Length: 193
Image (cartoon, rainbow, N blue to C red):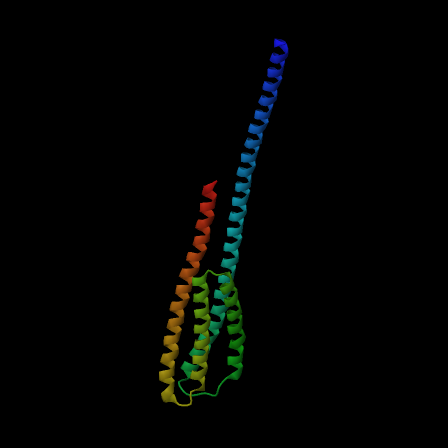
């Protein structure tokens, strides 16, 4: 009888040992899988942040390029008008040529607004509004009928142009900060591993 009890205890001990070993192995496997999942999730987050940064950077560059093209054409038109020092007939073709460039800048601005972040989106909208105002100021300058009014309107256009430059600089600073935030976020995610 003792042999049977010893055998039963031995079998129970073996079964319990096997169960305990299986339990510990399952817990170790769960931890390994959880760690692996965290690492994969972290890698996906880093990749998403990089993708987001690249999209933002491309949107910002496209916007600045389109904005610069519209501004350069508008400035050139204004300088030509100033060089004449007298009223001239309105060059509708020249104004019409500036409009699609402004529209391209406006469309690019919408992409920036979509990509964000909020401060950069607001700065982009301000730039679009400012270039629209500047284009209108040059048009009004071109429509001025008297030489006396040209000097005052020229100063208005110049001041609007300076304000545009200041807003563009502010946009650049905000855009750079937004891109740096994404890059710092990437670095923080990488450091977590």
